[in-house]
Image (cartoon, rainbow, N blue to C red; front, top):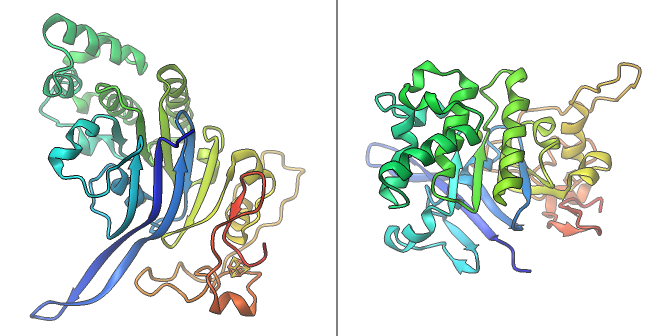
Amino acid sequence: GEPLLKIENLKKYFPITKGIIPKIAGNVKAVDGINLEVREGEIIGLVGESGCGKSTAGRLIVRLLEPTEGKITFQGQDITHLSQTGFRPLRSKIQMVFQDPYASLNPRMSVGDIIAEPMLVNKIAAGKDLRDRVKSLLETVGLDASHAARYPHEFSGGQRQRIGIARALTVNPKLIICDEPVSALDVSIQAQVINLLEDLQKNFGLTLIFISHDLSVVKHISNRVAVMYLGKIMELAGYRRLYASPRHPYTKALLSAIPVPKPNQVKERILLTGDVPSPINPPSGCRFHTRCPEAMEICRAEEPPLKDAGSEHHVACHLW
Ligand code: SF4
Ligand code: MG
């Protein structure tokens, strides 16, 4: 069937200006031509080091940012250049959960009001129905209905993330983009929030894009995982295939950095040399070639396209 969300050749360049009379001196190529189809009901992990463009991609999809180029299709409708008014009927269908929920929760509003507000604004509920929904949403995310009267500062980081998730659910979204939703939380709390998101996905038939810098975080929740590097998707595969038989040297290096659970199992760590190059002037050819342990002559000259290597395993590398 048709994918819920289709991203084609999506680009976002941020101009850098220089001089007293500002002149454009270059572009930060945050997202530099990504293609991705997200199926209804799946959880897709979007992974890469900081600065790879994964958050920018998320913000483009929820239209917090205007793309420089490319096309975004949601439920068959081209939403790339919809005006605010044109996008309004769809706004509730695509929600975002942020890394730091505290920054996005109004400290002067009670949690009940924070959750009630989108339902009031979107005329979803009012009066007693609204109060009942607030309570039920709090319970859905594992909080107590009595918490409605409290304020954000009275909650722990994990609880605040639950409040952010409850608020995202108020408008019956189809797609939720979770941008590093557990990165600010203690490891012991991370699993709880991930489990909650997984339960919600099942119970509400949601589609999730789970953005993280950590492959081990998305491992247990994702149906498929896309690995990004310097604004591009390098590898995309079902999570089992990606973790068991990664093909891209970058994915291999990221996976080799995850500690193995069994101490008697020896794993060779692939150490990447050098820093991530600047997204202003990404390297020619394969943009990973400056750090790739397997780089060949052709890698400097030619950019490898993201190709289907069979079994829905896509990889952008000249080795394949
Ligand atoms: Fe490494 Fe070349 Fe593959 Fe890029 S294309 S990942 S440089 S082997
Ligand atoms: Mg980010």
